[in-house]
Image (cartoon, rainbow, N blue to C red; front, side):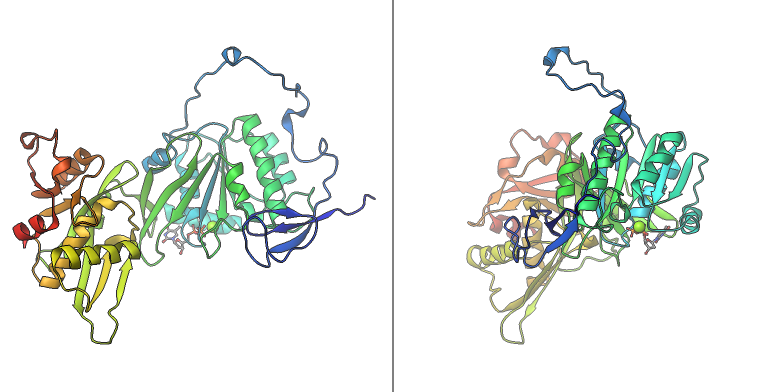
Length: 456
Ligand code: TYD
Ligand code: MG
């Protein structure tokens, strides 16, 4: 028998070392090294290798000689997923879907499996029994005669089934439950996850079958253990959301076949995930009365304009040091805007508690909501409401100047579509814009004061 070969792996980043280390030289984490048994047998005999028999050693080829025909993508019934993937599922692609437990990854994938009724879909689950999956399918209220379930965790057995079954699309739930017989360490360990992913990658490429892999995320937001996985796959999707809120966001963090700035929004209902095609409607609360401290900002998430509600509450600090708290907006940026308001606007906020909240559980990084944030804070501080028909799209600089933002036309059109009457933008953004083309009233300003004098 061959001597057992072991190596130490950082469970955080996958760094390999022949001996145990206290601190990982690659990612700097402490106490993450675990010994894993490698013992890979003859690589040719090893994992599933369908192309082995016809494998021709690769030779360099002139780029002009390489034939390339764009393969049509598989378009799913789910518009949000199509967009996030860059226009449908690419043949032979390996897609990793990460997300915290319970966020709805299995639900999303099963729903896609069931709605792709003209493709043979194989859903391999190592997490749940057939009955549990059936129960979920019942809830989803979609039926398909082309969706097949396999509960199995050994990759060799899975590939044996696949060879006979020849699915059009393969779904793995989840990569952490798989194990390959050629690696001795337990399922979920770095070397197992890497090996199983490599086997799936090879299968995807050689058979041109798209493979979706679900992966768990650790509490600090990383894909469980192996960051290495992200490098191996073609596309990484993140499924996020607050478990207490119904909204879920699907975003791409890596995509070899499209842009990474696209975003899909879903709502988790009793009967599965519903696509939200007009997110602004859910992100702006319906209110009959105007309250102080509430404003609407026109932001962009990916290529999609969204109007979101910003709420703030400013009140005098009764317990010593004033508190500053923000949800969904960068706390440092909030502090900066407060300093600008204090210094350039003359608002005495130094002794006030400031609470800021972005409605809908969204995290916003687009600086175009700066002006809406400032207006919201001032509105709460002065206790004067801003009409719900007004929205904002501009960045605020350290000098209190109102700065231009990108794709202003798109933001204005979205605001107009949603029935807003007035939008505040930077004067520098107004070049080339003509009011005649819009029903919405476009107001411009170069300084914060100009905005506040005219709306408060
Ligand atoms: P699940 O897909 O099992 O999450 P994951 O695979 O990411 O761990 O989703 C679990 C949650 O979704 C669970 O709390 C129940 C809820 N859910 C619904 O609200 N409606 C539904 O139709 C389904 C199937 C699940
Ligand atoms: Mg699951």
